[in-house]
Length: 227
Length: 227
DNA sequence: AGGGAAAGTTGAACACGGTCAAATAATTAA
DNA sequence: TTAATTATTTGACCGTGTTCAACTTTCCCT
Image (cartoon, rainbow over all chains, first blue to last red; front, side):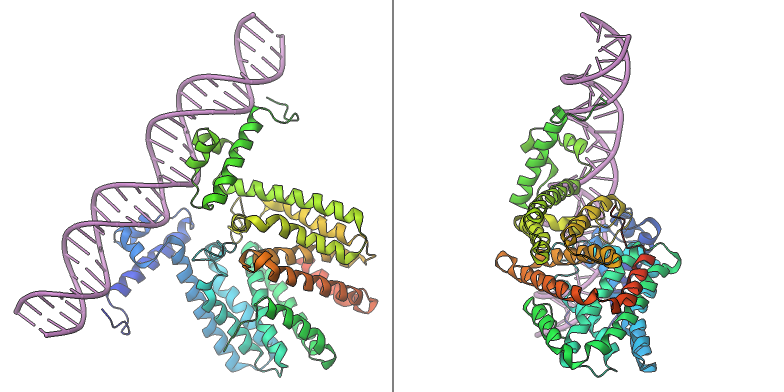
């Protein structure tokens, strides 16, 4: 088997069946309580079949997170086509992820396991997720594209907003207020703050400070190449 | 047995033996590779004895993190007694943790497992670690105590610096430069930036903005009661 | 001193994530 | 069509974290 372009080969179908069974069970019993045996049973395959398609139980969640990311890109692309208002765009960028994550807060929290373990293949900050980070920052770059920005801010802001989103996402998982209004309000406040600071930060007087910050972050190898 | 004031009872000794054996093995083989059986063997007790003292393997790391926290408090108390220079104090607050964590970056990263799982008993942002967070923020409050600050900044800054420290700590774990110079440089830059912004932020003109931010964070229930 | 409760200790057993070699099905090349 | 190759599937097995009921030791109270 060399070609893998045409979708829904036998294997893809099996993978999908397992994936769905897993998500169902995770939602019913929680991630830890659901066992691979249960998942395989519900998908009507052997346990080892599940491991043929997913390297580990956590990998299934990772796949789900990627699906969420793709859906977010779609949603944002739509909104960005409709409005050129910065505030609205930033709102879409942040809240779209919230909307998609809302019903699976318990599940998606698993993505943050191994955050502190650089060597782990599923570390959300490790090389394995480089592409996911890039895609996430691209959303913010696109959101900002209606604004005429100095070069340095153009490099700085996607990173800053990505970090903001990661932080808010964690808060979101802890937020038990209805509809996670608490975190959503915080996000709105952060957007307001950002937009306000933006007009300030653009002033040429602040150029040296921006340069200092950018240099610092660049030396820490944190500024990404978004292409 | 009701009294538990006098230390080094039989139990405390056993606990210590297990704790040391565990840390040794974690350092030799890594956290995941080291098995509870090995730990028990090295400590010359039954495997279940380890579980009498530690609820889980991760709990041992948690205990270690608490020890690190205590050591940091000690170090900072010393420095704070010696210098009233704000920059020096903030430097001590951040770098003391780095210094203590330096040789066990792989181990301490485990503390961040379950960050995204509010219900998990070991979640580093959950209720179980409320006291640890408080202690960590107290260090920053003490570091700032040489400065005459408006009330709102006094409430805001410990939280902000704690968050900064958490973020930097994660970076620290990923930092492979010698002595983690990269992250340390970033920390120094952040301190410089903070001190500079502080004199600006203190200006009464900015009071309304500070109030807005504080209100936002207070509504999000993020402002701690440090007592 | 002695009896009883609490603290400490143990080995056996369980449950589940993960591995593997072997079997079967699908696909390609000839 | 057939043989070789690759993709998929399987059941048996393993290692390890965790639990538990029973046993032993320690300590307190009278």
